[in-house]
Image (cartoon, rainbow, N blue to C red):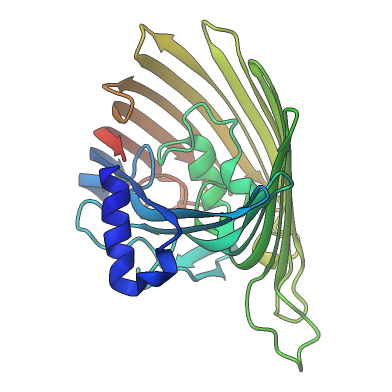
Length: 361
């Protein structure tokens, strides 16, 4: 109740009448870990933000329009809890350096870099417009819950894939649909990611589709992303993922396989990634997480990596979780871009240890 009152007060500073009939809630995550790591000559020592979940603050609102129809909106900004700076801005750029795809992020100059959308919700599902998660952001087949030390997160991001729990799976200027029907969830998105130039025969539109079936301890799903490029002669990036998890009670097994063609819209830059992991409950509040992943580029020798993580999470309450973890990422001889700590030369391996706390509100 207190959070809702605060949210309404903040909203009132902007436009009191606009929110008079709305139910607005402030929510967020504060996540910080003490981290120690190295890769070649590079060292990491200090507070690492968003180890288990990205630190963020957001506003979520609904308005009942009658007849089962609701207006909904989300405005969400990420931040680095170590220094209070906003998380990387909305725009991302890709470039090829020495035959490798690299992703550049802008500075944290956007107002709501994680999500910003408005839509309508009802029995049919939800239709929304704005900056939103593509279906590949929320795939649930990761034993380390898409944390910063997750092999799937590290390898998919480093490889330039958009089926990843990172910024490349947040799409601007998008129209999205989501709905659930008898255990089957469907997500679809179309994004006109930039302003079209009438004199260009190309566009940079993107499409995504995700389906998941959940029945008791079983979850299985598939994701497909298709991204064009406005650059003449560029290839179309096509990605898909198949994954699943099963909770046996004493252990939960999770695994996925994904394939990407023309990563960064570069012809023959094809990659595949597989990962597998387990979650083992320890008592009523703890879990041990173990995961391993491997990524390879089909047409580039020794340009992939292997990554594995051992972590423990302990719920101190419904909203507060303590954690400790270790990740090692072994880069192949012709790359150094994978890992929590960036290497200084090809073949460097990344090691990181972290202990921290996550609080949700």
